[in-house]
Length: 318
Image 1 (cartoon, rainbow, N blue to C red):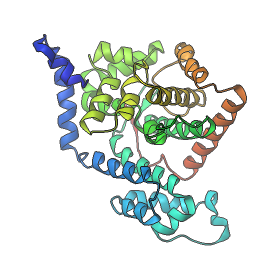
Image 2 (cartoon, rainbow, N blue to C red):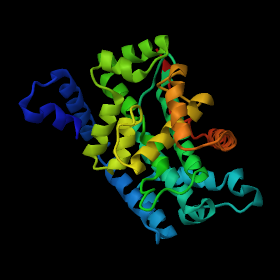
Image 3 (cartoon, rainbow, N blue to C red):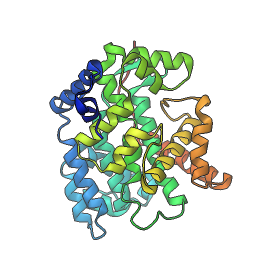
């Protein structure tokens, strides 16, 4: 059930502050040049689910976003994709062929979702740049983990795990943009001092959490329910069905890998280790495979850093 529907159900007393905060987010998304994001993501997911998708189909996606084109060309011409041969890639279709359609999908997803991570402020151990780095690390971790695990059950795997990782903490960025002066800064500072869960501090200082806001955004944008579950339940695992639960365990394991590697901002600390390690055990991931996944995530993020993937967001300390 959507959070706003829950608040209005059966004429019960409303928590006016919570409803006001959520409505403010809804208005923000509608009026800050973010209204095209859900439609573009829907088109990307549609192409990604089509087993007969062609290079031309992916190229047409790139026509919608110039920054995606630039990122793709930089990646295709990097040493990681054969630039040492001297063959320079100058158009999108050639770049898609070189990097592969799956990786091309990840590039455009990253470019589009990055538009949701807007701010220039550092608060304690938090900044939008670090939150974005962590989101990409979890996205990469999700993809690498899914490749290392047994195939999902028939009918499973309908949600791109990379996109789920990118979006899992998007509610934090939205809180920052909407409620910086209304409790967000205090919540981040309090979490940094106590090394607990940001979720708990948000509930105390904001009366609403990034998980609740993330799920509301996902439902408003008509995202698949399994994807909404990652945004809303990556802390509590309160979902039904094996597919969304598997994706949540994958995302939590990727979060822990990013935390261990100190890749960006994590909204939890050492005290939550038992919960995150329980997700690793639920996936049946032994030490050897876990170490390989962790090493690959570290390597891929370093490559993206070398390509300037995270340098576009400028921050300032306050």
